[in-house]
Image (cartoon, rainbow, N blue to C red; front, side, top):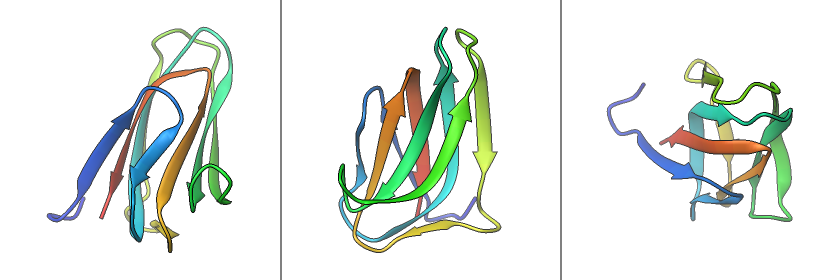
Length: 92
């Protein structure tokens, strides 16, 4: 992780950062139903940049390290959560 990295935790779909950013990591806590974490560029109606399927396993966790190939959000970064308890997005 870069020294200038920041993070935002969301418990429902919402903004991660209101300006250009590079997503370098995602940590999620799954729920009892299969779901997904979608990272979008440009808010709720923005372009889908990454979709991660999550398992149907209550309290299962996973960290996805994207630092070698960050997801570039030109406008703003937004996380859409479906059947996910929480998601922490690490960005710079």
